[in-house]
Image (tube, rainbow, N blue to C red; front, side, top):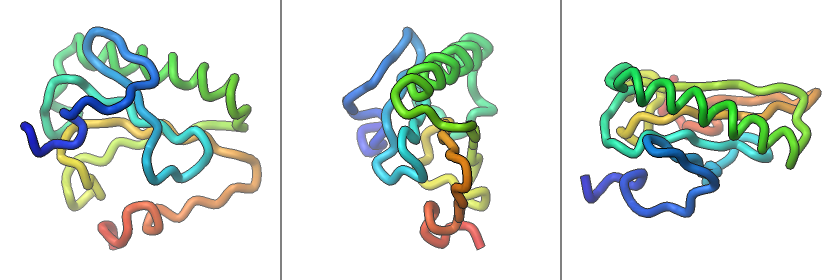
Length: 116
């Protein structure tokens, strides 16, 4: 999958054997991270049990890192599966989005009209 941006050697914040984390290039909020399986597959439903467990572990690790660095008041975890659901990069990934008191998120702004 040489055309897939997530299959390229992106600068990783942290990683484990099966997944890695990066900061989103178009963040919804300070600290918005992506959790990305190393193996290329389109939707999170295709993850093996081991990959699913690795994704969960990375979500927790990144949550702890973001909490220390940015001190958000809460988090959203978003997974878009398929173009109709707003998935832009067709490589499974999880959005870990720090939330701050009073912050309003407009999903259409982030997805640039891919969800109507």
